[in-house]
Length: 605
Image 1 (tube, rainbow, N blue to C red):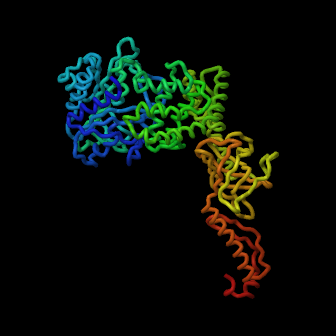
Image 2: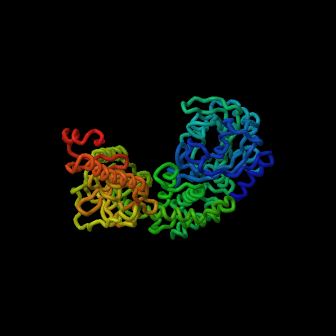
Image 3: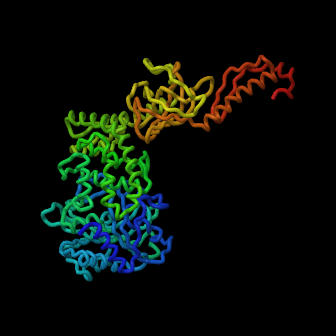
């Protein structure tokens, strides 16, 4: 049975039992700051479960797009190491809002699995929460589940919550036994993480709301939230032991193999890329873009992980965005929004991959050398830090590669190096760059700031606060950049230097100050996103509002000088000034008291 048929059969089954078919909601939860992504079908009904929203229909069903790659529910690190974990998956669900409860939920699930799908009852294993006698009684005495295939488990396994706060309650899970030829033990056993017994359905009995302080209060109407993994059920019905062997993945993996020039269709990297393109594409469809924080950071991590697996397959040019077309063929009918935004998603992924390609190649060269020369099983913290700080190579990616080689990271050494870097940054926060940097061989900076607040430029030099020459702008800490052309005014004559930012693709470098050494302008700041290195073309943009305020205060110093000389006499001389955006200071020598008396109080103001 194809995945699309299973999806439709599920929805039809519950629609025939008075459930309203609801479309999949966005992967970005609406008005819910407690969740990073939609991680279950019940997310769009959270307010209904809490009693804050009323619905005309008290039953619903859906096939919900889900991402579990950050926050409380995070499967990213397991993708590529198990046959069933994904960053993106489809959750089939049926919901009762104060209508049927445990008995109805259990009966529906059992009937759908054993009668509609035809699964053998003796291949199904059931678990309940250790204190849930009601659910146990229904399973054992009404459904007649074999006690030998039934177990009670603790809160870790059989008490479900959508997040640290919100609706929660005991749950009952249904597992499928793939048979003794597959490694793994039953739920609750020491080897339960094997692939023999796979959870295919979770029946959550919503009874409580968990508050921020950990306390739980009963919900106004006990409800039901169930979730059945489409990919896992498809694997059972298509008689394969891995989700990556079902029809949803077979065509996708075949296309990825062709794009990457890989002949071994069992290569694990193909599976990782196939999983990751699904989450990346649908996150892009729902408006998430790569960044250095929040949802955008998770998306960036997934993209980089996929690109690195392409590197493992020998791909050195951008390729990941090309897989979107294949995904659109496989899933576009079920989710037409993917077809509508296909071009946008391809462009977004292409730009992100191009930005990361250089970092990946440089970082992999260093990391592979370090692994080759390693005498033990731990990669030194200094190496991890160098990759991160100097080359912008993500720590989680280093950890992922180490895991593939059965190695670990010296995270305490990494944190120690990070702390030293932070101390140096704090100590250098007020350093003066004038007459300190080795600028030999650099030509004078072309300044265009009198006529424009923005210009195209090229990075010609990068320095650390300790005046070390760098090739790449590090991902953390303050650095100094020299451009061939700039529109940033350098500190001079008491007027502070301009601030603003540099842009190049998705890279952004925030400039906090501009100074000058001889005729070379030096821009101080931090990289807030993307990657930059010597030779990169950038767009330099001055913070216009701040420049305008500084210009006005600069003019005010001249007016102050003219006024004082007019009132007190030509002996008043300017001895210095400070011109900032929000204030100015005008320095002049003390005026003798006799002169103040001579001109009178009415003139001295």
